Length: 458
Image (tube, rainbow, N blue to C red; front, side):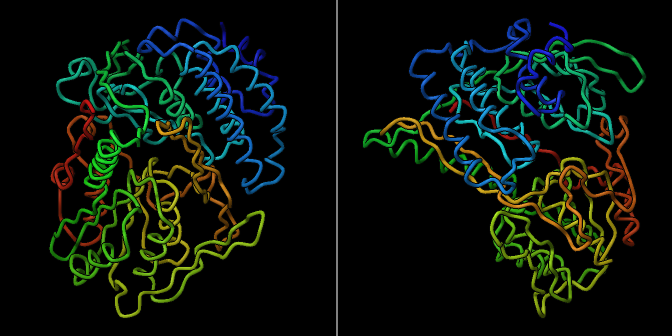
C-alpha cells in the first residue's frame, strides 16, 4: 500500500500529523512489514479484552489530567471510538500496542505516551543510532552480533525498515519500532565515502518476563528481578568525572540522582577547578528536583526556571542558590539531539542567565512536565502498564516553551562520520580547549568509553 493511500485511509483518525499517523499505523496497513516480527502473539479474547481496558484507561487518564482541556483540538471521544473498534480487528498484541501508542501520539506531546509492559522476549538490534544535525547515523555496533561487518559507526541511515529517517519524525519512528519486537532491521545506508547499500541486520532475541507474579511462591523472584533492573540501570546513570587539572569534565547521564549525590560530586570533584565542562549529551532528563539543585549549584542567586501552564495553579520551578557551595568558575554545557527535558532546561537557563556557553547540537525539544499513572491487568499475576500524561507546559523567563523547539547551542558542533568511525570526540575536545585545557579529539573520545547495557536472558 502506497503512503498516499495509507494517509487517505487513516484520515478518520482526526488531527494526527500525517507522518506520525503513517509511522504508527503503517504496520497495521502494510502486511509485508510484519515478516520481521518474532512470532507476535496472536489475539485471543482475553488479550483483546485487556487491550480494550488499557485503551479505556488511557482515554480516562488523559481526559482527567492532560494540561490542555481542549487537547490541542483533538476530538478524544471520536479518536477513542475509532481505535477501540480497531482493537477488534487487530491480529496481534503488537498491533494492539501500536493502537494504544497512536492514541497518545495524536496529541503531539513529547511526554504523553503509552509505556509498554514487559514483553515475553526482548530484541537487540546490535547497533545504536542517533540524529546528528538533520541526519541519522549509526553511532555504535555491539560486538558479537549480526550487525558486525554489515554496518559501521559513521554510516548514515537513509531509511529504516522502509521509512525515510528525518529529524521531525525521528522520535515517533523510534517509538513505533520500539513497540514491535523484530527479528531483523532493513537499513538503507550511505557510507562516509558515499557508497550506498542495503543491509538486513538480524536481531538477537532473548526471553524475558511479561508478568509480575506476586503470589507467595513467586513474590521473591519478581522482587529480585525488579531490584536487578534498578541496579543495572543505576550503573549507567552514575555521574562520571574526569579531572584535567584546571578543567574538570562532569558527564551526567540523567537527572535521576539525589541532591546528596549531586552535591558530593560538586563539593569533592568539581570545586577547585577553574572551568567546568558539564556534558549533558544523551541525557533524557528526569527529576525536576535534581534539575533545581543543579541550577542552584551554578547560580549565585535564586532563579525561576519556568512557570507552569496547567489546568490548575501550579508552583513555578524555582532553583534556590546553594549558599556557600555555588561553583564560581567558567561553565561550558554540552548538548545534542538526545538531550531532553530537564537537561534542556538547564542548558537554556545557562544561556538566559549568561552563566556560560552551550555547545553541540540542537536539543530534542521534549520539555513538558508529566506524571505516570499505573494500570494493571490481572489479579495476583499482573501485567503493569503505565501512561505518562503531561500535566503542565513549561514557560521560561523569556516567555517561551522549549517543546518542539529545543535549545540552539551558542556554538554548533557536530561530529563527522569519520569521528564516529574512529571514536573521536571533537565536541568535547573543543569545549575542554575553550575552557583552558588541552586535548585532542581522539583523547577526548577515550575519557568516557561507551558501554552496552546488558540484554541477557532473564
